Length: 396
Ligand SMILES: NC(=O)c1ccc[n+]([C@@H]2O[C@H](COP(=O)([O-])OP(=O)(O)OC[C@H]3O[C@@H](n4cnc5c(N)ncnc54)[C@H](OP(=O)(O)O)[C@@H]3O)[C@@H](O)[C@H]2O)c1
Image (cartoon, rainbow, N blue to C red):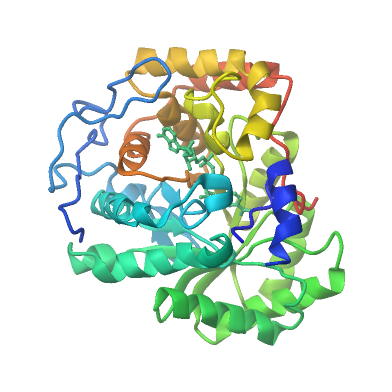
């Protein structure tokens, strides 16, 4: 049912999960060369909603990052920015409709043509009859991609396997992996991630799931394994266990943004660094709150409104800072928010629902906030009274 245990919204979702080439040329634009000059990366209007490029073409004119700026994740190497696909198939929270598919395909094509190689999905993404839709769409878009074969070869799909209560054995977890491969019609998954830890409520299940990760890696179904929603202590435990079984743990995915930068996040980052594990930051735009397009009187449709109503009224200092830096830099607010995640040494995976959003978010590449700007953003973030609610399954 498109489950993502991130917040209160997700808590509501938890209750439900038990029931649980473009046909037109992709509008690829060279937003800005990696050295930061030229290119229509700015185009800012107040509110940060403005896209971005004035010129659209089917050719990638300049790369958004240099090959040596690709980021190592275990044995893999990916773009410094990935895209998240939770919304692809999720009607409940993200208002997905089937007629969005053509535009999502263009979004995918645009991303790939511009060097994005990391796409995050999950076997639980997709609500109701769209269960599994995100993985299915990604597989279809890969198959139908009309650009160079090399673009496709470089793609790393990071999918997540839900720790559903009925997945009690390693064999069941391996079957979950095979189902994902089937949905995507791929022979091998890039990163197979355990979606959340059951340590808080079913520790015995946890060890079966770890064995499941080992088995899928040893059977060659995944090129690397990762976790999601693990805290620093639990991360060390699984890292050590997997190591003892000869399996490297390559990534840890966690909610990480200017709205989610607590001591726990920073400790997780430090522990990950010390273990050689790459941090992937999910919800880098605070589910859309950091884009500047929502206010207490202009809320999104659906359950996000409940959360936004609580948090947005206290976000003025942070949003003003994002806006000010964006204007000065000729960037947009989402670009600044995503760039902050990159500057903190993580790989952000903003969710994208349209070509316009992907295009804009690509503009977070090719430049860096200064350390003074980073401090300014972080102190503004600390002034905000309400923070994002953490994932209900996030462990210590
Ligand atoms: N491991 C986990 O438990 C977990 C949990 C959550 C997410 N994730 C992963 O992380 C990815 C990203 O997180 P997220 O989707 O939760 O939140 P996010 O990236 O913070 O926000 C994404 C949403 O912001 C809006 N948006 C994106 N770019 C924009 C732009 N340039 N301008 C204006 N609006 C823009 C879109 O929604 P609207 O247009 O509707 O506002 C989009 O769906 C997910 O897709 C998923 O792959 C993982």
